[in-house]
Amino acid sequence: MDSLRSTHITLLKERTSVIRRGLSDEINRNGRLIAIKGSRGVGKTNFLLEYCREYYAEDNSCLYININNLFFAAEGLYHFVERFYKLGGKVLLLDQVHKYPGWDKELLACYRSFPDLQIVFTISSIVRVKSNEYLKGIVEMYNLSGLSFREFLELETGIHFPVFSFQEIVENHEKIVNDILCRIRPLAYFGNYLRYGYYPIYLEEKSHIDYLLKNINLTLEFDIPYN
Image (tube, rainbow, N blue to C red):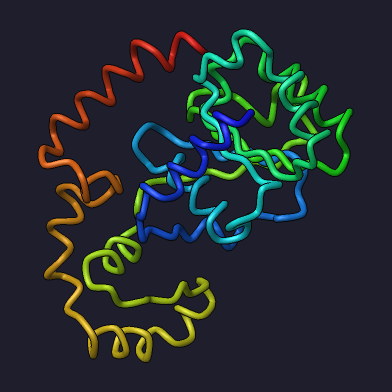
């Protein structure tokens, strides 16, 4: 447990990303079992770490874990969650949970056994969650897509752009457009967004095409067999 906590702390310190996704505002923080579903490269790991930073910074009752850790091959997911809960754990962030054999059955067992524990987990976009026979009716699922053009503009300019509802756009589109054009010229950024702005990793990766090809291969070789 100490080594997992150490990894958690290290990741929070090393990942100093400033990307705050709009999905954060949609999450029901009272939900007990929350799935974050998305394709490779859209930022699921970053999302979990940002969730921890924003709501549970310096809180030892919250723990991020990548399910690929060999620790789970020996102890098992349910027994780990049981120990985490007994030690005062309240929020567990599980990354790539679909790579653990029998993940759905064990999550159901955790849901039934620990009623005041919240589990937020990420899962591949090709895995069915809401129709899963074990999780149907108890899991709240959210889809994390790549960066919207609004999010890309915020990263590139450092300017915050609010989210508007469809009704607000219909009723106030002229004012909204004028307010935006007073601050930036969006079309100056749109070409770059179409070329590489969908995946947050563009901030780190130099070759966008190589990154896409790598993700396609990983999806075909690893993600699909887990489905």
